[in-house]
Amino acid sequence: MLFCNHGSGVLAISQPAHAWIWGQLLRAWAEPLGEPLLLAVEQHDIGWLDWEAAPTFDTETRRPHLFRHVGAATHAPMWTRGVERALAAWGAHVALLISMHGGLIYRRFTDRHRMSEADARAAENYLATQASRETTWMQTLRLDRVAVKKESSLVAFADALSLALCGDLKAPMTLEAPAQNGDLIRIELADRPGQPFEFVLAPWPFSVETLAVEAEARPLPPGGRFSSEAAMRSWLASPARETFEEMLFAA
Image (tube, rainbow, N blue to C red; front, top):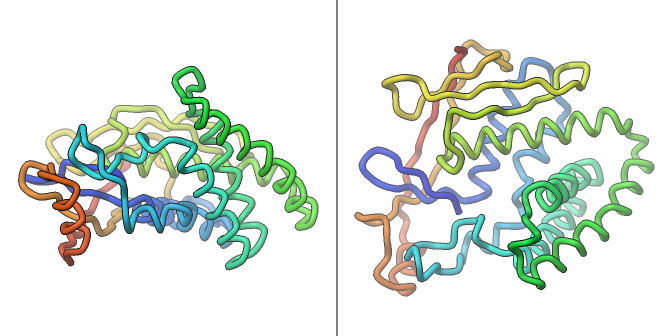
């Protein structure tokens, strides 16, 4: 889960909802993108579905665990199951892109010096196991490695931008996205002055003049904390939901 201060309260945004925002971003991209890429972006967090339905309770924050506080020993097997689900449901191209993004996370964002031995072993096992599968899928589908690298870069860009829109990363920040020729370009994200939940991007990478993205989240109770794990479980069983919207503008 991610947590976003929104209005007078705090929203809990699931990983699959965060992925849905990715899909909305890339469906507005300035150049046409393939359906396997768009589907992979929207469904890449399929491995988190079961966890999001029954998250673990963080006794320090008195909230469900923030996704960053869930160790690789827990989420690396989830990523693997997500890849398997994608392969069974949609085929090798979608599974490939989801697998590659998991690998990017474990290579780029995991500080092995701060990981437990179990987490480090789980991350290394994921990388070793998925690498050969990814090679096989690319060969079987006869995919061009340069094109796949561009698709993977778009997935990473949409991930970072969606995390910023969901409140996990803070603007201003610099993102990288692939140009049409595949070269990475720097894109600056900033808050829109005086307008909460609105952002500006430069250069503008989308095919529309402004872009609105939305998803559904769970409002946390007043104060944003639970008195106990039992209170959190009761909250999970409640139907309360809230739609939130974020706006993007050209700088």
